[in-house]
Image (cartoon, rainbow over all chains, first blue to last red; front, side):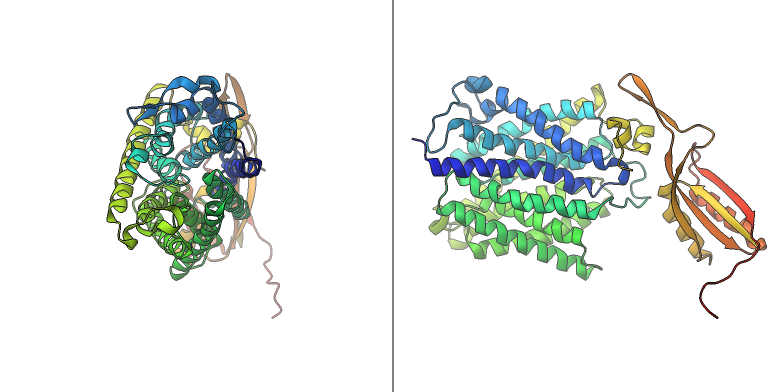
Amino acid sequence: MIDSGDTAFIIICTAMVMLMTPGVGLFYGGMVRNKSVISMIALAFVAFAVVSIQWVIFGYSLAFGPDIGGFIGGLDHFALNGVGLDGDGIPDILFMVFQLVFAGLTLAILTSGMAERVKLSAFIVFGLLWTTLVYDPLAHWAWGGGWASQLGALDFAGGTVVHISSGFGALAAALIIGKRLGFGQETMKPANIPLTLLGGALLWFGWFGFNAGSELAADGIAANAFVVTNIAAATGALTWMFASWYHGKPSSLGMISGAIAGLVAITPAAGFVNVMGAIAIGLVAGLLCYGALLFRVKKGLDESLDAWAIHGVGGFWGAIATGIFCVATIGGVDGLLYGNPEQFGIQLLDAVVAMVYAFVVTYVIALVVEKTIGLRVPEDEEYVGTDIAQFGESLL
Amino acid sequence: MKKVEAIIRPERLDKVSEALLGNGFHAMTVTEVRGRGKQKGIALQFRGKEIMVDMIPKVKIEIVLEDELVDKVIDIIRTNAQTGKNGDGKVFVYDIEKSIGVRAE
């Protein structure tokens, strides 16, 4: 039985989540150098387009088809076979496209690890392999009836599926593709901070659809998810800003990064925690992700735009924080803080497995693409910039 | 009095500027410019066709100073701007007739 209110709500949420993908593009585009802004934004759109097609042909089925050994879905829904206009509450085809926009966004986040140096052709091949071999199984584990959901792991809107996967994937990809030319010797000044702030605003806005929509109904849990999403983002923005203020200037880039860290961390918890839990989650996320960024810089890792520090580490924290702060009065499950350490154990296991799987498999995929068609542009192309070299366009 | 005008790689500006500062040369004017040298820019292969990127971003540093300091400044700029590859840039030296501060004295 289709509910028109729920359906209307999820259609709008889906459109909001779609906007997060170009949002990531603008967020990243503002942080790279002048010569790579266009290509950085374009990669997000390319990710979205590639995954859109993959998803309707077999990605959706791999994630949400009948369970095979707790690991992956079967191909029963190949080419959307049996995914129609009817459904439970919302049409099946709407659930499919709501999940599609998540999948597209996840690959867009991962472009951080290859910023300013990836070959477009190699990225398309990598993206197809990645979304098939990493994203689809993780989505199945959390939401499609796989082992994590059988175990009772909570992941409301994709802490493991979207954020741990893309964050640790970006780190693995960065290790294979190598540092940008001149990394560590030259200052790589961001091209346009307002562009990044605009991208961050679109992310914050879209995240309401991302988290509230994950309830798949217009009800109290959706409203709770909306509220805690905003609270965690605000807390993360302030704590990262204060932490960077302590180290020098309260940069706007730090403030918006903190907001995203808060949004990432609340994602798996949004349907299970109250406002006080959200404040705690956002507070730790702001400090922890800022610390992860400092650690990355100190180690000389060129995971250029910090998908690892923000999405990877923030997602990991969010997954275990869900097991700490969840309350039965909201999502029906108590966490560590309310006398249920078992849930914390399940969350920890889920997060660790997702992290290791995403890192290792991405590493192998990137290595295979590197050894066959090559992941990186030639040196002179990188010098003049991927905008002109890969897209034949330039900002100036 | 002379003016030293150096066209260098933009990514080397910070290094050059720090080295100049470290040697007591504070005053300079920097302009973002684009241009090409002897190699006529950079030729890239893209999907089977060649594209010529012939106006490459550079920065121009201008420093006006006493004659006897010119060689030292050129030396600092060259050591810090050099990569050994095409496109490292060029240094020019001009005669300056006068130098007048704008602020009233």
